Image (cartoon, rainbow, N blue to C red):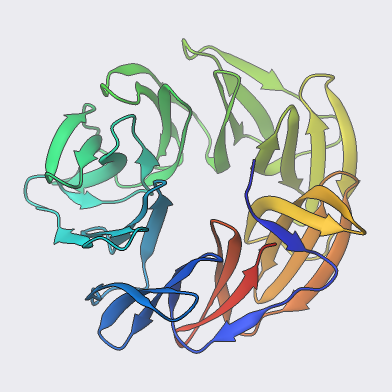
Length: 334
């Protein structure tokens, strides 16, 4: 369940005239000239490291006692929340490859799992960022890109080149099954009760632990993308990503549909307070416009423009809206 709960009636957006990489009620991580600084809310400096040149392209992962950042597929920075000395290094691209996916958690406290590309081959590795060593890895595949990944406690799923699916043991890297699709897989991969859900040929498909496939046909809906999964409720887009649908996977029923006029570029699933009640909500970006949808009833709660916005991101209990010219809008949670 998301820690982030925002006030959907009074969006308290705060604009920062610098790039913010992570923000919570306790601290903020941002770019200050040639440095990345981690600063407490009372302005006390917790950590400082050199900022990579290609800082605009990054992924981050909250590991509990600290936050791991990956910049431009090669620079790894770990900032400890207790203010201990930060860890920073560049991976050996010749040996490991360039990082081409977001990181996911490993059972090992000091390691994460991500995909790397090297000499036209892509593989997933379990990487210890303290010792700078590879603990395990999957086999390699001759592919050009990883479209998306998803994971649960045991399995790591991935799409290569929009058509090739894999399922691997998350710790050992053992490949359990692979599958080629004859058409593009669009949108996100979602893990649901030891199954993998994905969208292909406007259908929702479910792959079990052996890779066997079932089609989930939703009447009158030609699926564009899968967005989020909360319990048994699947949230997806259709009609060229202009409309949103909530579908109950347990009862096989459409719960609600919401019409729109513009395609959704990306979305986040968090929680929101509306009239003193907490609801699951979806924050969607359509160009520079931001919408907030109540996922319980399928209703737009708020809509505003964030000039220059090109990406939205959840960091702990805050929402970041990355904007051009190194500016950031922050929506604090409660």
